[in-house]
Length: 501
Image: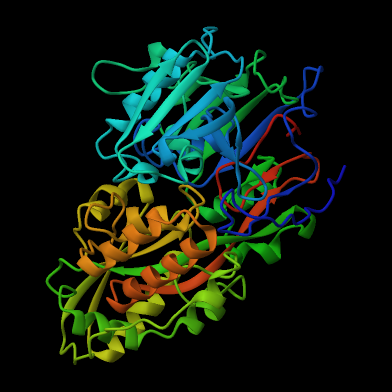
């Protein structure tokens, strides 16, 4: 039976920063999505295999929330606002330096209660993680229990968007026994979500069963069989043949060959950009960065590679961030381009998103015409991440959802473009950029925060450390028999308690 076509829901953040939407095949609120039947099992194909043994402190955390295994005190709703999850309410104190979260009654998957002690322990461990999750990069966060059902979270400086930070999957909460003395977190059977991991097979698959004591109601599917399929064509084929019920990040080249009823395109704040390593031999020279920018025709990528499923980038924040265009200012202080004169560079990208290697080939040709010698390095993300974060390439082509971490653009700027940023792929360290990002992060008024964010964007683009290429849409595959798939522009959710085959 065909599920209804996804509908678009527009709205704003807790501090109105982003208009966003969820698409789904029906309502999926915890209060009405529980089921009493046994239900069938869902088969899901995810694009990104675990890179850190399911550690919740990195990218693996997003697989845990997409499969409805883990959750934190708050979550992002369809409008991009921070709403209750394990916390049922919260209030700020000390001018925003402290926030007190009142916990709901809930259980961990090991049958222990979710208590203030357990939550404070989880947040204390994540605050000590090295590197820190991107959503709290640079934030000195502490947590302590206040009685049995309240947790006080304090930051060194007033933080008007702390409830948004806590929506990040890396801030998920696990039972006391999950945390080992070695700093590792065992997420198997210790989370709070409606599905519990019962078996792992390396980085190829996970088996999940329904957790019947989930506070939000019993899930309608009895379990999930998740496969990590890094090849996009293979994900599309698995959907086409009925081997999987849900497949994410489908290649645009496969869309025409799929049943149109199974293809769901969602506008997202995701960009594809060329990140230039400002510490590398080539691109520590701003004039060579300017030469690279001048060589690139983004329309060739939008039309030729993405076949109209993306548009040429206008900045760091694309059309899904609806307020950005009206507040954008032109970059200033850009260096004058010089002749590359045969300068050799290596550009790396990953093939989990199959359009990226194609984009790399287009950029290779464009840069070579300008005078660069260009070598390409293509791997899966799991095999690329360590070297990418270590700065072993002159440039990286990567895909980044600019609201992925918190839903707050100022937080993303801090993690991606400041000297102390934990996901700074360009290794940019610019005093002016740091100053402007800090000003944006400190601004509590929503409109003024937006304006400050765009001033910081102009300064970042003025360094030519990143060259935005296209603003993307994400294509999800959903079998026509599936009900209530969660198609999230933030890419944090994929199934919920109401999702069923």
